[in-house]
Length: 304
Image (cartoon, rainbow, N blue to C red; front, side):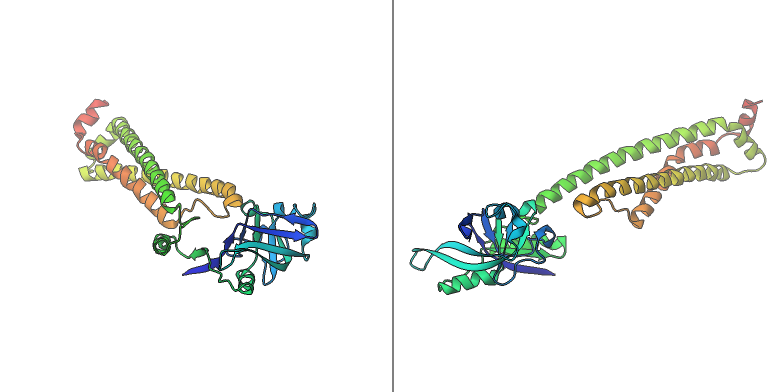
């Protein structure tokens, strides 16, 4: 589900409180981009005939910004009328919030209807020059972004750098996949070496098994089983280390990003174990074939 909020952005605004004046960097009407968690003082975002200001703007009026809550200030906007003559629109508003977030520095904010009444009083039409879009699924960002581009809007925020973010994620995925591929190749080589050494060291035991009636496929199955167990235990150790790394990474990232950056799902665990066992079995093909093809007489004679 996608929702849109009309937003008005103004640059020529000011606040007056008695003889004190504050000039913000910009004015933006209240929308979803102004989070309540950034409220340093006040219980709610500005409503009708209310205004909120960032702490740095409030300090232009008083040394104790939070003391401004509940006070009435004069909000002024410099505009031009229908004849392109400069006018000053003014309205008395009550301060309901002081913002502390770094993203709100230099800001004034009031609800859209409050600004609209100021325009209507001067018989001017207020047209939103910005829109805040909330998109429920990341897959829909591109299509929504293209829709607003066609209607003359310039996207910014999450939608604007989504393509770059996806590119960086793709590059990281390829790099990690390459590292994983090299690790799997090294693992396969090590398994082959271990099983070849096992065949060499257990030649006599293989000869005895063949002498008492073990078939070649029984010997082959024996080494396949060893390879499978190596893969299973290796995969289990890898999964355990992944859970530990995810727990440490999420513990560090969650206070700053408020999300878990590493998620290990049952599907990933199952895939990892199957891949580990499969690679081990494939790596065990050559050593198991060598063990199965050993001549029992030569094997026993070699260790007489």
